[in-house]
Picture (spheres, rainbow, N blue to C red):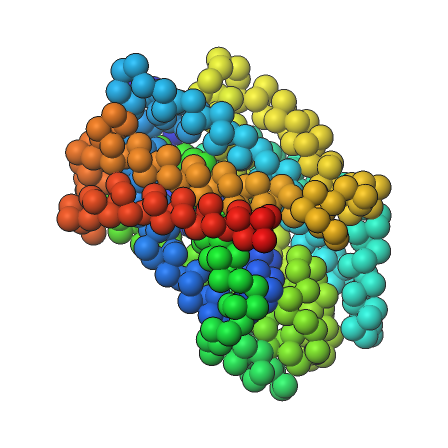
Length: 458
Ligand code: PHE
């Protein structure tokens, strides 16, 4: 069956590409601003708890489904489900999620690209804080500029994917990830010793649980759940696809733990870079999606050699974003090739056009369509698309994966365990079946329902 399916060239390739899919704007852009909004260290604790208790097991289920089926989410459940069951309808939900994610992700990746070019060409030179904020503001007002960078991102992403799994995706992402990991360490150290930044470190590292009450604990839990699932890329088959490109030499729990560790360390380091800077420059950490764009250029302006460091930083942010874009594009391309007989070239072309068009509402939501405020005053199309993916598709999709793997009428626990545990490495504990089948889904559903209630009905 499906003998010519491509494979990664090495385990390192698999780990770095999966980490590349996980590490992205979620870590360097969203994590800081969501943490800022929800009160700092106490939020971070809940987020980490969710990663360990919910994220890692879900990651294992997804990778197992991918590896056992050797398919993308577009066909994986068709291959594994019991005859006569309807799990495979999940594909529509999951595929929609991948497209929706790219509908706003490409825009923010475009911001990173724009900032890299501004930094490198000295565009922030000599600007004060208002000047820096103005650059962000005028970018948002300019639909042609934003669309241009968004299109650039889409072209680069599909350009790399069209060269194939090993020669395109694996080769490029590997290099980008190694560089990114190195630079993050250097900058975190640099920012953590910033003068006036101690307050920021305190905000970020010393939990203040009264901050949770301010936003309402249920809303905070809901946000932490969304962020934990978003950052690990779980719930819609974005990670499962990479399970389909590996063999059975390693067990999957160990790989999941490894991916989570890499992902979490990048998120935590982003916080170390950003919060001291916020407090050193008097910027409100609750500023929302603009946070890193109005904070960090100030840091680089005040730093010797700042233009070089700043350019490197935004270049590597582009890498983080691009590695995720490439991963999700690879998944999207495999939907096309798993479901139809169309050639890879044709699938790439159709999706390239489709994703550019689908990304326009997000771009225009900041200017021509700014009257559309789907989540209340001041919200944007981006906030809405992000909410649908992070707070709906990912948690609900994760529940589907978990139930599929643990229920008899799904793929079944024994099949799942055999797949997760084949190969060398950490075993998935047998004893937690009850937790996986009952407690985990109920916790996710509880946080989901209560989160909705507190957001919209209180
Ligand atoms: N994990 C990615 C990030 O942090 C986002 C993502 C979510 C990717 C869901 C795929 C699926 O940027």
